[in-house]
Image (cartoon, rainbow, N blue to C red; front, side, top):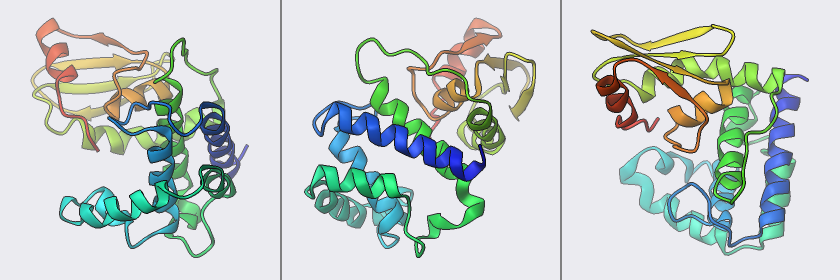
Length: 210
């Protein structure tokens, strides 16, 4: 499976979950429902004028306005838009951003799945997990930049990303997707920690927003 097909597979799996849960289900994104999360994904791909406000707070008023309008559109139509992928004129249609798409869809798919009772991690997927792992070095450096101690992300096979240096180091162990979710600030991630208890608590308490 190529990077593009991995992104398409994750996008379709998310679309299936959104369709199954309906528009009013909870997510891990604060008070957003599945309808709100879907609207966020639609404007991310199809409204480049509103996308900067996702990351730049002074512009967020416009993003929120556009997202509210998108959320008011037909839920099924928005799911179809996500399933079809970004249009050719979208900045996110650029091939080298495919890894960003896999990461985005994986996180938000789990935001839907893990807000429901009885969730469990999905089976490993070598191509998807390889792409997520390749993203984790940079994302980890961003997320743990304010950690008072060093942080290393480690896969079960021993591969590592040393993402923050410090006087002592906490190692976070997990599958790539689980490490990504924890690094993205999701507490519903299957990871374990190695380090002094106070250091582990400090890492857990770090603001891990990208």
